[in-house]
Length: 206
Ligand code: SF4
Image (cartoon, rainbow, N blue to C red; front, side, top):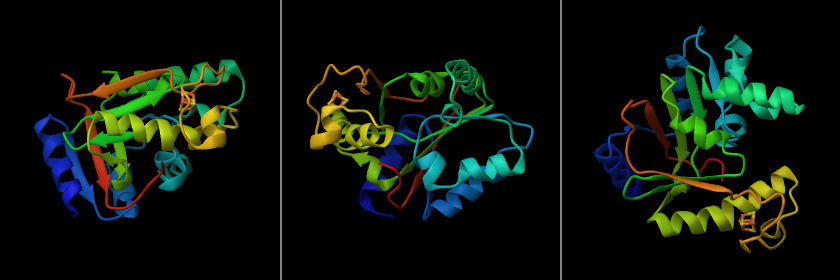
């Protein structure tokens, strides 16, 4: 385990989060799949790590869990139903934009569905999965990472014509498709204690 992961794990635990370390994404995926019962509903945010990078989404779908994931539907009505289902799901799975060495989770959203779901006390468990590439020194470094790495790549992936997608760094735009509309810092575990962080000794997502 590298030094930064050990520091982050200790800090997250001090902040009341449940934390576990995995050498690779396969082990982490198998753990999550073994912990989710077939009867449980599962919500997803728009995370590349939670969907494409790990295969958790497709495995759950294949075995028949009821899933709420807005990217799989097209109409506004269908999306609303997915957002509602995800925020009320038994289990929510997402990644994180950055984790500071002092054990804080930092996320920026365009729509807010992921931020709302991460804070919802309705879930039995919220799995936050993160590769070591998400670890940053502090809050300022988290914002720099999100604005200059995460947002440009997400803007490009989603086909949004934001300045960062073209030049690879934030121009603090006022674009209609701006994806930095709300920032959430989770300093500590919430009262209901449902956030579980699974750290992986690999780079995952962005
Ligand atoms: S504010 Fe605009 S330019 Fe800056 S990262 Fe967000 S979407 Fe990109």
